[in-house]
Image (cartoon, rainbow, N blue to C red):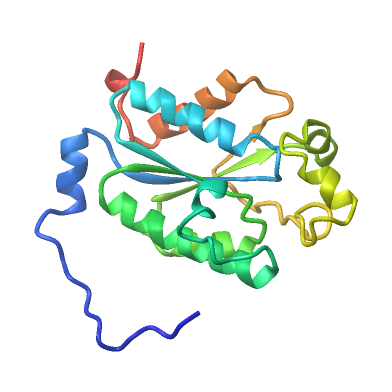
Amino acid sequence: MTKKSSNTVWHNATVTRTDRERLHRHKSVILWFTGLSGSGKSTLAHAVEDYLHRSECSTFVLDGDNVRHGLCSDLGFNDEDRIENIRRIGELAKLMIEAGVITLTAFISPFRSDRSAARKLVPHGDFIEIYCQCPLQTCEERDVKGLYKKAREGKIPFFTGIGSPYEEPDRPELIVNTHQQSLDECVQSVINLLLSRGLISQNLLAK
């Protein structure tokens, strides 16, 4: 990583995060979905976004594959590049909640230290870790992208769960058992958490 320049100064905007949240009629927050490949992170993140969008909330999903097409297209999948990938996402998500947006991230983010570093970028309560818990065997059986098969064949080194570890969250704000609960049940669990924390209000929600 390039050393930060000493010639940059943070510029405080005239329009504040609070101003933007007032316009959107809800709080902004980072919903950090983590779990093995095939655990349902992207599916759940997009389903939650769809629900919130229909409720007229301002949302955006940062999806692992999409980000690697642009912002992180220069990164590979060794440990060093994975760490940098998550560092960039954390910084981007931090900017997006300043814009008043409910920001959903769907990344394996296998290392606890990286998720912790992303959490520390924002004030307490602004980072909600959602663990999409699903057994490795079930993820392999799904193998939506055919990646586990390639990893088992040695064609993908450093693949999480096969050639590289996944460190389960110690104290996530929410655990969803995506192999046991329906997608609708998982979505409702996330929505209920947002409601309980006062991040959205009941009168906003889609009927």
